[in-house]
Length: 208
Image 1 (spheres, rainbow, N blue to C red):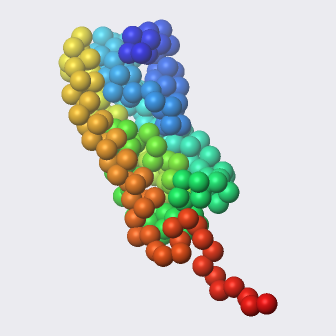
Image 2: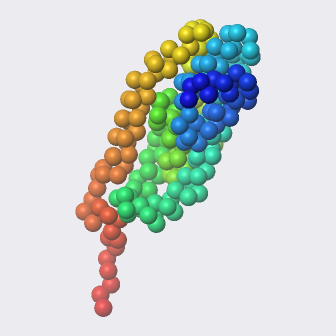
Image 3: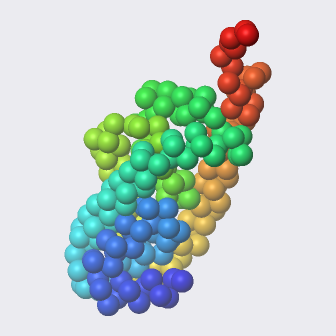
């Protein structure tokens, strides 16, 4: 995949960076650690300015994140209410997600955008929890900027050895994936209360 991504960036430049990073942020597994460092390397060869790589990648993360956010906001709650019981999700989980993003949404999106694996999927739960869209965009941009700047600079400095960036980031990708799995498990099973294990209706029933 790395060669195909490099081919696209070589031929289409900043436009390819923007499109690929937009797709990455819509939960399509395109590795930014393969796209942005290579674009940084091309910037060192004067194909285009380094700042353009960083701006395009960051703007794309915000745009792609907004798409995923909109999907989560429009369909996520309805899907969980309708089908969530089959994967042990219920309305209480939605309430907990909304409370979490109401209190910690900014730091969650900011840190999530800095972590490989997790950064790709953080927009969906933010949308499901209906985090304010302006706040989501701001912290998505603030979290994406240092990530893209670091990758682009690494590719710029390493030049033809830009591929070593991907190898160096792999352990972080695994750590991010483990954190994502842990967060999902906590969301599914954490703080379960009697009577709510399968989305049961705990309201008092009327007697005949």
